[in-house]
Image (cartoon, rainbow, N blue to C red; front, side, top):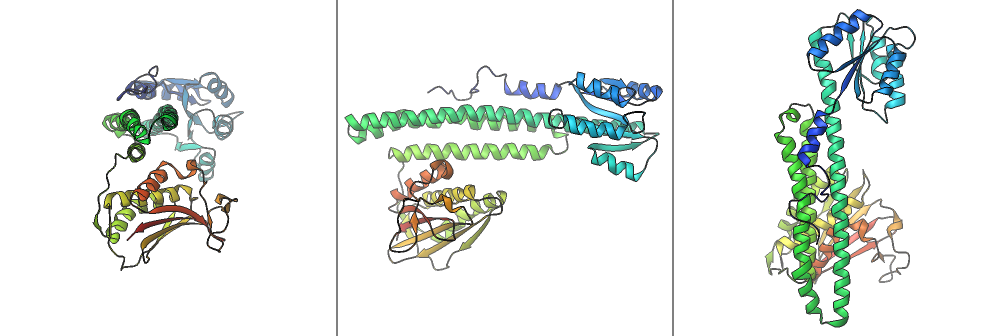
Length: 425
């Protein structure tokens, strides 16, 4: 087990706080372009006093050459009427040449205002259109907003790089861990009774799963807290949206860690299920309170067909809710944007049945080798890739089996796959 709680999975990487601080402090220079030298010098002097590093150019061609030579130029303040390459042409070329390589904000400045020119400037990618004589206060505000926008994009990029590195490392560790579990289990199955295998999983691998994955959640939560406490970020427009994305990532990482831990516990028999009378209506209400927001966020509609006279059953309320929620989430993950899921519940003679159908899903999900069941055209899909269904589905299936029920995947003509879950009455 290589992970250590609270440590970065990449020991050579700079501390998280340092990497975000570096992103905030990266140099961002401003280029002022105008064919009137006195205006260039006046604006440069003013903006330098306000803390900006300014470069100057006196025509569009010189501006293009300086931008090419200096990768730290991030804001371009340009006059619109200049000989040769004018401001609109400069903005157009910057968009064409650098949009995929550089983070540039263009502000157009002109003494010849016109609505057509303003519209054209915005089409060319300019963020604002100022008229001469320009208010220095308004100019400063516009430049500061452009600078903040670039800063936020760089922070977002830095966060995504860090998160990708962290998750790639943890994913590799989890895959290696699961491979070790399977290898040890197979070895012990050939030479020892199965209780020894369960004890091995319980004493060695289950603690590893629980404690080696927790740094992932801690890392994401720590980055979120760091950004929430930074006054520079709190003052930036749109920062609350980025922080919400971070918080959502932390929640998803927490759910993944809990799910994997529960699956390992179920594999070695550590989970004990209660046997009490439970209300199916209450169970479905709890399931939908989680599934409905998830479906809405994924752009998937969720329809329910639930009778009001469902009987109570003897089972474990929490684990049934967990299992049905995980299976619904598997369906949401399979559904395309704009797709639909339906949830049906029905009480039969000896069991209660839930059917979760993905409408409009590709029929290629069906197992071509599976034959018809019970004389109709229904096919079981036992070999649908676990990568498509996710670890939550694997846990749900195991828990349902422990409750005396079953989970299977079917496909019918003109319909997507259907998860069929049964629980004994």
